[in-house]
Image 1 (cartoon, rainbow, N blue to C red):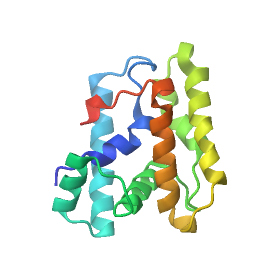
Image 2 (cartoon, rainbow, N blue to C red):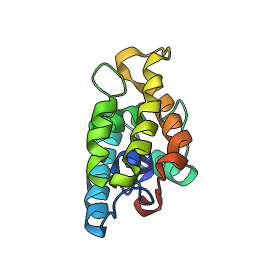
Image 3 (cartoon, one colour):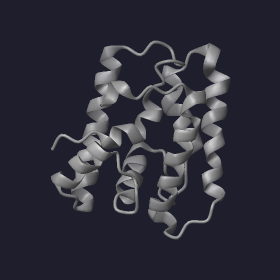
Length: 154
């Protein structure tokens, strides 16, 4: 099952090629492998077919049909905790090794901006599926400030 859509979701934590210190090819490969393992585990746990995963990858679909997959990926990465809340501190800790000193404050501010998703009302509580979508959308809005380049993960 070759599915990398989820890598796009979690790559925000992994690296920001434009704004972080130079990320090596070895680091990129390590990140790919970790995220691929998480994607395969989440797909299996949630009962998604290989065809569904491939379709999401191709279409970059993000909707009610796969929001719990996104939540699973965020939980496995530590971005969402067991209560279904965004963990800003874990996100900051995970991205820290990739940050250049020059961009540290700006990237930290962008990551912190997404903590507002914890204040928004969701219908699924600790499952985190609704919040995962809110968080993903926030990351997408912040990607310019974060300088995130996701090309290397596809």
